[in-house]
Length: 218
Image 1: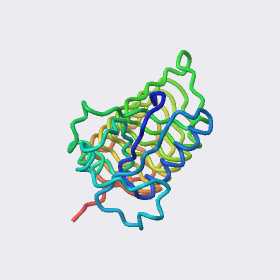
Image 2 (image 1 turned 90 degrees about the horizontal axis):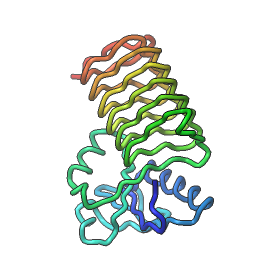
Image 3 (image 1 turned 30 degrees about the horizontal axis):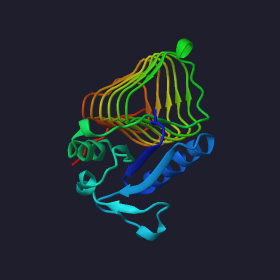
């Protein structure tokens, strides 16, 4: 979780970065313990004066400052990996960020969430769930029992994940995807928006449609 009195910077000043700023503001409204110093971004696509906090510089400028708590706000797993690999992770704290409306009882639910992971508003998690490091679970998702989610995976809004599902590392689940009970999704796979996945997905595959089928990427 977020250390008391933390100075925090958000990595990425795009739409997700600004949503994370709002999430941190909600957390602050419950318990004022965070100073959001601003954003780092290499290729910001909006005017810096429209950001809710200062643009502090590009990713390479982070070591020059005294901010040690960072939150990666990137939807694409590949982008998350590339940015984090450019940093000495041992020098920074990556807190787990959870929207205050998500109720978890660790003794009964047995939900384990890794460092740097983010769970936004409107999500429902049941029991015996393991979530790796730097995972994003965006708005309005449902995650059933005995689900495992690997590091760096991103789950976009409105996804429905049934029980006994295993999702590997660096996986991207598009908005509104549904994963049927017992399915295994291997590392580096991409699930298209609205896809219904009713069988296992192999490593690196991209699947789309209802039911989901492999799409060849030229």
